[in-house]
Image (cartoon, rainbow, N blue to C red; front, side):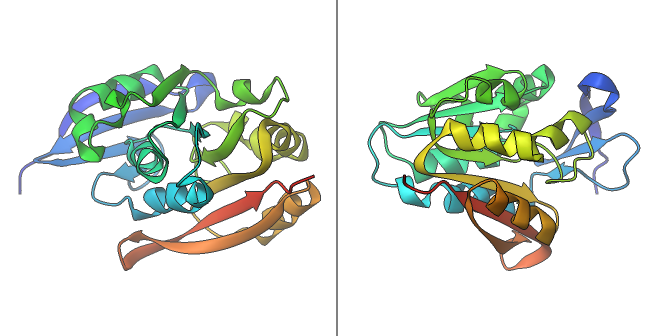
Length: 227
C-alpha cells in the first residue's frame, strides 16, 4: 500500500489546533492535531450528503431558494446541497479556515466534483455565525457541519452556535418553514430539547457514515414553523 503524502497544514483560529491534509492514491484524509483517528476521509461521506438531502428536501422545486452551508470540509455537504436544489438557487458556504477553501480549489476538489466551481455557489470566508448577526430571515435552509456536532472539538467558539442565544439568531435567520439541519457524531437528547425550546419543530435521524455501513451519525432537523 502506498504511503500517505502530506499536502498541507492549516492552523485553526483561537488555538483550536492544526488540520493536516494528506493523500494516498485517490484517497484524502484530514486529521486534527491531538485527536486520534481521522476527522474526515474522502471515502466516508454518506452522512454529510444525508445532511443536505434531509435539510433541503423541501426545496427541490423551490425557485430562488437560499441555502447556507456552515463548514466546507471536503465539499460533500456543499455538493449534495447543490444537487438537492433547483437551478435558480444560491448556496452560500461559510468556511473559517482559508486553507480549506484552497484545498477544495486544488486536488481535494475532485472528490466531491468541484462544487466550488458551480455558478450557484457563493463563498463566505469567515465564521458562519457572522451571517446570523443581522437577525433577519435570509435562508430557506441552514446546514451546519462545522464540527463534531453540538459538542465541538475543533473550535470552541462553535459551541455558541448551539446555545439558546445562538439558536435564537439562527431561528431569526430562517424564513418561515425554513429548515435547520445539524450534523453530529452522536445523539444528544438534551440538544433536541433545546431546539424545541428555541421554537423549532425538532426531530432526529440516524444515518450511516458509509452507504449501509460504518459509524452511526445523527442529523438534527429543526424546522421554523409558519407564523
